[in-house]
Image (cartoon, rainbow, N blue to C red; front, side, top):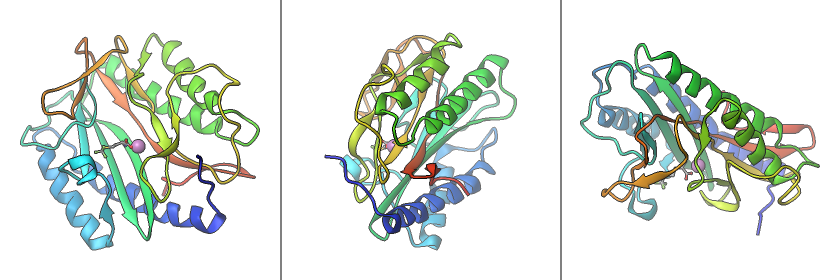
Length: 248
Ligand code: MF3
Ligand code: CO
């Protein structure tokens, strides 16, 4: 069942999401060669404490951190560690927070120092795929119009979309219906309606779409070891069109 949100509830979701993006902005400043991802986690904890918001991922299905930090061939759910970022890496930072009964969820992929042209193109295309998906998140459209927009962006550039992880509805729960796949046939799926709030999260691979999960039980990596990028916004469908909640 898809839970529709009132304008007042959308506003609460926006507040949670603003915290997510404010913290992501702070963390961006620290993303440089030589920093360990666990240091980003510590900075994040401090910021959340200051803002009186709760981390959403920590303790979710026993996940032990506030952040997911996924480097290079890591697709999603990479865990902060003592591993230091190196020049040329790409880093996805994914953060969820809980504030006043509602969740916020967003992610960005950032370059570490100077990255290759191919890595730049992957990051750019994934970000553009999210923009196109947001554009499709409007009343009258169908859910798969969002999915198809992402797939089209990725595949027209010779990249592939991850099929084993999906976006999701978001609200009083971190993961609500509907699932939002990153591939699909336009015109299919539920009709989009005012009050739906979706976390749209393209995960795009430079090589093939297959992923596997490491023995840590969390880290998803590309099966072929090639790069993967990930962006995420929480988006409300309104009469006036898509409203990106995870924007400053
Ligand atoms: N943004 C991802 C999601 O919404 C991150 C979840 S990490 C987890 O699914 F630890 F909470 F699972
Ligand atoms: Co999400």
